Structures are given as C-alpha cells and as structure tokens.
Image (cartoon, rainbow, N blue to C red; front, side, top):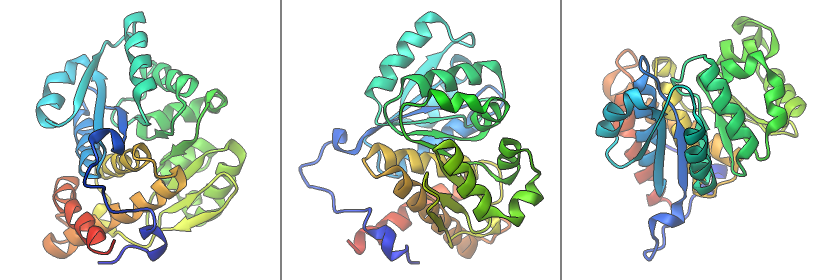
Length: 286
C-alpha cells in the first residue's frame, strides 16, 4: 500500500503540544429523514481523517440518530423551513468553520438550494459541494456567482452530466476534458468520481487518481470521500491538494477492503474500519 509520493508532502508529523484547534473545524451540512446515513458516514470519515472538530448540521428529525451514531461530533439541528433563527445559527457556525461540506443525503429540495446559496454567499473558507447540492446546482449554475471562497465539486458521471447537459456515457468518454473545462469555466475544483478519478483545478491542471476499485461503487462511498476532503481542508491543506490526497486515501481504504473482504462485500462501513490503516502507513513514512 503506497500513497503517491507527491501527495505525501501534504502530511506532516503532529506536534506533541498540539490541540484540537490546530486541526480545524469542519462544518458538515448533510442528511435527511430518508438518508441520514450520509451524514453519519461523512461525519465518521471526517473524524477519522484527523479533523479537530466535526460539526454536523442537519434537519432536526434526524438529530438523535446522527448524534448517537457520531459521538465525537458537535451536532446542530435545523428546521425544515430554514427559519430566521436557523440562518443566524448557521451563520455563526460558518464563521467558526475552516471548511464546509454541503449536500450529502440532503435531498433535491428548495431547502437544499437555500442552504447552498447561504453557504456560498457567506463562507470565506473552502466549500465542498456534493450529491444533492450538486443536483440543485445543476438547475441553477448562477449560484456559483455567489461564492466568496474556493469551491470543490465532487460529482459522479451522472451528476457531472446534469451540470453540463450530457449523459454519463458521454462524460466518461472525455473525463479529463469535461473536468478541466468545467473547472476553468466556473472557477471551481472538480473531482470527477469513477474509475481513475479526475481532479482538476481552476487553471485546468489535473491529477488522475490510480487507487481504488470497482467494489467502491456503492451507496455512501461518495459521502465518505467528501468527509475526508472536508477534514483535510479544515486542517489547512490547500483545496486542490485536499481533493487529490483524499481521493488517493479513500481509494486505498477501498483497496484494503477488496483484499480483505472481496470487492463484492466492500462498503463504506468496512472502508471506514480500514481507513486508520492508511493513515498509520502514512505516519510511518513521515
């Protein structure tokens, strides 16, 4: 198991006098009644990836389930109507955060659109847009005009297709071109998931990830990846480096699972279990 040598420079030994404030505060706005697992998976991945504080904001209907499943997280309930009080509370959270993840399991709703717009308008730290926040964005790309900070989008081929008006097969036929052109046009970092994930920066520079396997093609895998990116960004790693490094680390956890349990049985719960082995190997080489 080896991480790309160029990516190893993004890691450093922890100061023995460090405290949780040194490793950032990730705000994860994720989950809904039918997809609360997305918030749990993203939260656990973020915590296992070294974030100082993981703050999960979610619809109040799933507050108990999520808070009992991710014990290390700070959990914040929000109402479905995204009230004035919710806006005030979320703004406080945004100002404290050093990275923000939005979209995992939220549902393609006006609620998701309102929160995405609010985050883009007020955030001064990296914002990771995933899943249903991407689907909302696809209906109104002008939302990106609101951004005040660096943005990472993490679409799978079908979601990428919705963003550019093509189908998944067309996207996969020209993955590098699709990712780089979208990044340059909209000024975002694009992480196009799939076999040989492509990560492109706003200038069109790109990286192709070589870790991972087909066993990772299962629900929740993307939520885990986004949680890792959020942790890396929160800790101060540059957004483009965070996206590249997270894709590699995520893929390595999947490769361990495929070897240990089979590709058929690989799933995010097992990948989360194996994730510390990836970081242990990284620490050994620092």
